[in-house]
Amino acid sequence: MVNERNKKLGEARSVIREIFEYGNARKQQIGADKVFDFSIGNPGVPAPPEVNEEIVRLTTTMPSLALHGYTSAAGAPEVREAVAQYIRTAFGVPVTAEGVYMTCGAAASLTITLNALCEPGDEFVVITPCFPEYIVFIESAGGKVVPAACDERFHLDMGALDAAIGAHTKGVILNSPNNPTGAVYTREELSALAALLARKSEERGAPVFLIADEPYRELTYGAAVPYPMAYYPHTIVCYSFSKSLSLAGERIGYIAVSPQCENAQDVFSAVCGAGRALGFVCAPALFQRVVAKCLGHSGDIEEYRKNRDLLLGTLTACGFECVPPEGAFYLFVKSPEPDAAAFCERAKKYELLLVPSDGFGVKGYVRISYCVERAVIERSIPAFRALAKEYGLLK
Ligand code: PLP
Image (cartoon, rainbow, N blue to C red; front, side, top):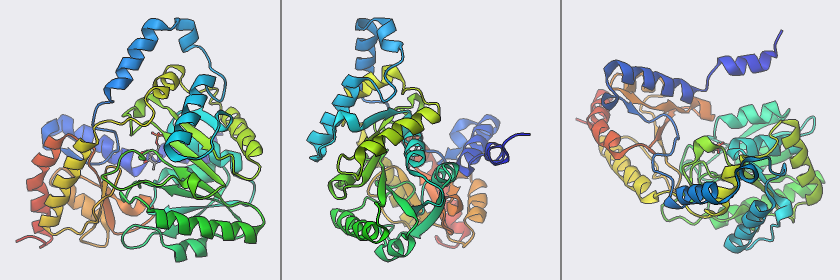
């Protein structure tokens, strides 16, 4: 009667959402200050002042019909030009407005790109652990997911990638800074990846596309974030302002197709066609114009850094094993027992809401999202200590 696949997707909320909803219910029962919800990646610092200033400026100076009406499907021309100009200046790659397509955030950027590229039999490689929705997006586009594990420091494992990329690989999704590990891939890693993809493209006789999912680009703690398009020609950047400008609910981002992609014009036409087929019509008109004036800005990253340092210090002192995150706002912690879901259940006893790693495609870890108010972390310290004691990590 209905599409079974979609029915299942609708019934089974993501694990992250499930825990988030549990946290909301629990807060109602025992009080918000007693629950330590580290489940979701909703930015915890306000949008930078430029965002509100631009909203006020636009809504008071631009005629309402012009401001709120449909834009061209790919975005308002002046916004596409501003994005292209920013990319050229910031990263030294020759992107033009004709290669920029405004979207409703990274989720839309990814679904449109995958639908634009995917033909029957195509495979897409994801580096695990990975953002769980990649699986939904790839399979919904008709593709097959092929995982390639990262190394033990959460960086690229070239051997695993070499083994995963084959004759049917249409693309590789790269996410740096990474959700859930916080890894930021280095220039050397991008060079090695570019060389591998070039070799694989040659063997395949067609490009293996690099799909760079970049919602956390600006959120780093000192690590440089090399621009993938500068390393590899067949690159499509899927950007979002959700995290950098704390605009997650406003749904705004873009796709940038490298002009150096093989058949770049066709790739861009397929992006436009996929956006049309998926019914996106155009990205939110007001926010297209707002972000055009805030390119390269971000919320106060220092707040995230302080959260990271406090949490990392606390967990390390408790005896938990963590790799310091270089960017984004997640800490990926080794579960002290092999079953991460069982560990999360035990953590719940102390009102600590953590996400087991199984949904990210690996076992034995938990993700802690630290884009929360500092007070939540401060109040949670005794709970983490009690949990560590239960596992004998702390005397
Ligand atoms: N990609 C990654 C790695 C993410 O972490 C997220 C959101 O958390 C998204 C894509 C989707 O972002 P958006 O809210 O811009 O759709």
